[in-house]
Length: 424
Ligand code: GDP
Ligand code: IMO
Ligand code: MG
Image 1 (spheres, rainbow, N blue to C red):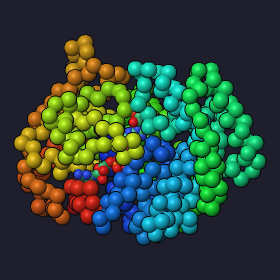
Image 2 (spheres, rainbow, N blue to C red):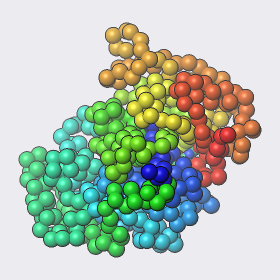
Image 3 (spheres, rainbow, N blue to C red):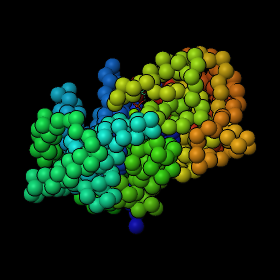
């Protein structure tokens, strides 16, 4: 049968690669944009016409041409945060209610999930994950342990269900000896958020998406977080609690794997990470600070400083593999514009002294082996075509393409929608 097509766009590093910006750029090419996992732990930044927006739960296809945006079953949703985010956008003149459909199977993040998130982090002490504190882990845990509360539940005997879940959480918090919290105010806003959610179309999104595909519609799936934060393939246990990889789009939207066409893998020209966990190419010197300052590397959600380092091609080759990436999208190369030389990790030295070119089971104690490349030392931020790219930058692109055996389709040279070069 002839159907429409589904492409997936996702992060290849530890998140914050620039997914929001590129989804916005690509939206005019699609009929539908769909989020398939994660929740308000995401912060996707978009800039255009001197406006800046940070989206958390709302897909990044909301600003271009009245497209349908779907929040899939794989997402976890906090009604109070969703309400605040949506009302801000409505205030600035963006109509959302007819354009956002929410899966009835998406799980709800309760106020007590956020407290549990804090309690688990406190209990881990030094080994804390450094979560965003949004209740992501506890909500996905309830989902897999078959204790979750879903969006569809708000339509029937909700108070009763909510109270039962809350009681269970309070017992868990007591067992953790965690009592220093008061959710009275949050709970009130949360309940307002639940009422607000009812103004949106709550759908069986798997049916809707497959129906749209039969009608030849095109869909872009927007990933959150990044491959190294995937609960199976990331730097476990310092990961998020969902499958951020391409297969997550099948699970989080109800798509058969054969429906997936292009897989756009987004990477920064360097690398960042927020929160704890190993990061082989992390820089603690002036260059690291320079990357943070020039790249404005501060968390979009928590404001935390992002850890910065050189690009890691061993890690990226692994990400290309587990996602089946068909096209690369290179972000933030402008941050390297002034550098004389640039480093890329092309191998690892393991703690036992041996070397490898494959991502090992554990990244702890791994040392990067670098190749030094010539910088282009040219301001590229106003370029509009790849023909203008300096020779050293072209060489750099070719080096990455060859190492990762994947073509670079888009080069982003600044935060604005207009600072995007689509390659031939
Ligand atoms: P996401 O979570 O993957 O959507 O990425 P974030 O929005 O968390 O972080 C990316 C940051 O880089 C945002 O502040 C963007 O505005 C900014 N950005 C995106 N692309 C570029 C680029 O090509 N150059 C520069 N300098 N900044 C960019
Ligand atoms: P976007 O979509 C970067 C990180 C947190 C923490 C770990 C687990 O904007 O790229 P969680 O709250 O999910 O339980 O935290 O994952 N993390 C992100 N880092 N970008 C994100 O999203 C992230 N979402 C979660 O910092 O280390
Ligand atoms: Mg982000």
